[in-house]
Amino acid sequence: QVQLQESGPGLVKPSQTLSLTCTVSGGSITTSDYAWSWIRQPPGKGLEWMGIITYDGSTYYSPSLKSRTSISRDTSKNQFSLQLSSVAPEDTATYYCGAKRGISSSENPDNYEIWGQGTQVTVSS
Image (tube, rainbow, N blue to C red; front, side, top):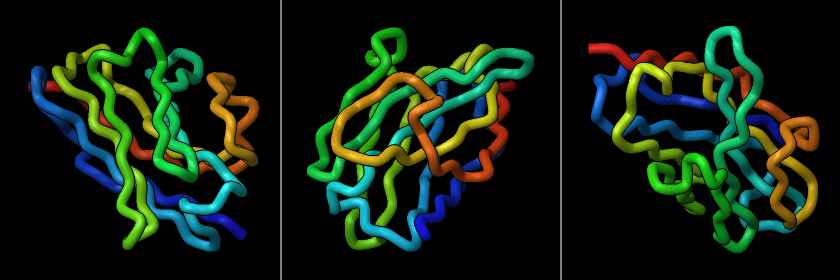
């Protein structure tokens, strides 16, 4: 059974880079069984898909966040990570890592069947 766990700082200052890591257990990020995403939910708003990394390391990003977002992986630790640069208070949100079956990308959060518990990140000075 695949499980996901987010980790990272809960407070980031404006203009800095937000960095989060998702640790995967019960499955490998290098097999084609799943693709791995970051999704966030600002307070009082809906889920926003940010980007995805597939089994072969290919990445795809939301057009609205592409210029500030990078997703990478550490196969030796079975982890994938998010970096969001030049953050502002509007980036305050609960950040989730998620997994969907298969190798294709999807911007629809409903397609992600496995979720981490989420981690709250606040952008404030």
